[in-house]
Image (tube, rainbow, N blue to C red; front, top):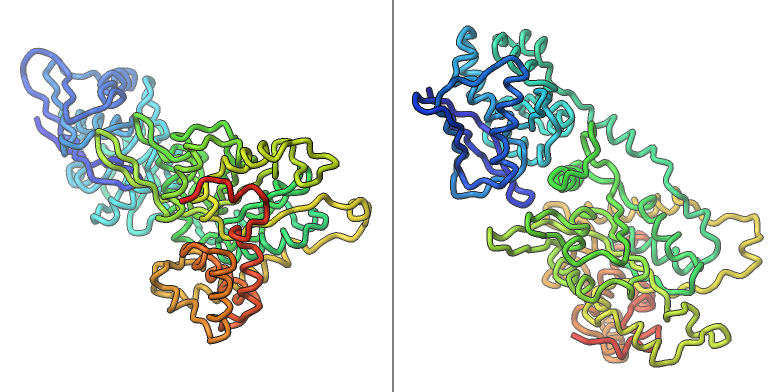
Length: 529
């Protein structure tokens, strides 16, 4: 007997439909799986067979053939266990006594891994698969109970969480009316307002704890308001990491669309906490400097999202920047420009979103105290070599650069605290609202997203401002990218001051933070474009 069950698979962070076809025919007993399968999918026949046996259901002594269509797309993961089990049970006639079972199964998508005891375990990628199923008009979806809330955030589809194969068997045997469905396998419910409200009460670290460093805090505020890349340099203990870790507390909250994007990536990577429905806070990724190029960018033999994709719509913080591998840092160049990363493998090409805010911290030399020659013992060659580890093209993609100085003793012993994150965030949110109004209907969300082609539209300049930009372009020997970068930052400064037009003071402040100024001797010796 033949049966067909609906399921889904992933290609990158995009989902596509998979039909699990099952045929049980007379012949020598056997269990065949076909359809361009990875090792863990081929192993599902063992998991399904034992799970059904331990649930009190024995497979017939017949030849079972399972095909995962389309057969020319490689299938990976363990989520096909449940649809294979349902297809076998339907072909065996296990649901024959329920006249509604055929219609119910035909309009339901199944996902889940089976344990040998029949338990239905958590799988990766439920959110994008459920979203694709809703787009195709499927009305119901059965997933592991640990993934139920994750799928329930998608409107227009009923997501039911199942914990054991026996529970699903009782549901398919007895469900008919909506009341019976809810009694046997209730749908998961989520309150998005409550989820975001809980995510807001996070007790993040406060900028009031940062002593001094007003210039660096101003740069952090500008970076947060416009989603600009930020580079901080200074001696050890000056507060670089402290400022970076407090940046999430002043960033605008995630919108629902951004939250769904971030959650989909976490779901595909398998990093979404069990029982979580959405990523409600902007991601903050801070990898160690020994991270490999593949772990940072993504890929591997079985491609997975890298750290830069897990930081999508959030912050990627690279502490001790020159200590990272040169290959890993140069791998950031294309994602920083295109806001996504392309991964090419023999099995196909994948694309992962990676629209993140890059925040970096570094010492000015190997010992950390240059240019204080009373403490720094590095030679000029050592300083130049250390700074030269950061290539010119990577430096050219930093929107703001700021130098931190050692904090004076008076500031550490003083009782007066600085401005709190709450106060800074109010200004950032006002600037964010101006950007939302400006970019309504376009593909931009922040000033940091403005393309070179849209500069005249979003960053118009008056006569005096054009003349100032010409002087800066010549005196600082700016690249075209650096020229546009100053305009983006100036646009954000104008938004923070609630001004419609970019003024000369905004351009001058933006140029003060421009890395092309050559604030640190030795950068001119770094590799250029």
